[in-house]
Image (cartoon, rainbow, N blue to C red; front, top):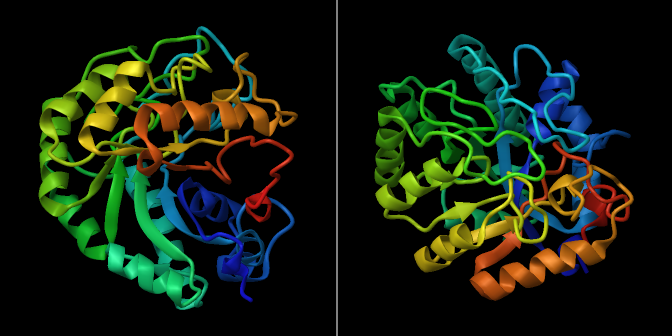
Length: 320
């Protein structure tokens, strides 16, 4: 019996590369391979929890931290969008985190996968199947010259925005309660990016994108719509969650949604509180199943990027 006899889990979103990058440790391979007391994902805990692979996000952090950091710990009805990250800063951090991803591959901690076949092969061999994903494309120039380079390096998925503006579109602010209809749609560069991603077969992640931007992607894209780490707005009225209309658009495209474990996007009161029951997660799952069908629902934990229910704790708690 192997650890994957549990149930192999492919997770739609984690921020482990950001955690390793911000650790400033020279030996991030050792941190990941041997395990660390903090964070949510490392190799020993991944194997214990049946974590077979996932979308490993590269998120360019803000130059200056907001009062609540990258992820809000309490709801607010007036939290503004953070400022745009300068391209030079975003490029530096994006390249640094991509380097960490490939260093982990060289350390035999995971396999960077460029196709569905690669994912299946890695999982069959017991290697973590890692998909190179960017969350917030501030590093990419509006002319998209860097996109081909990143694709050649292995980029297979991107979220146009995080919860802030950039040259391509606007993210939703962290607000509760709030509609995701919070600003303008995609810029001309953003629309061109969608078309280019379709041509290169780079998946577009709709999580964090505001409603008008979402509608632009629906109109332009010829690929299934995917929100890798979002929940149901009708249950938790956070701006980060998906409305009935958005879920319908995803369903009609043959797309899918990954359940986000962040407690502030799960709870009816919008609070970031680790003392959160799995029952509320199941309510979101049931609602997603009703809206999308079995093939349209996955997991998008947000491990290493959010406060998750204490009953899960970290990736080793996935079987729960």
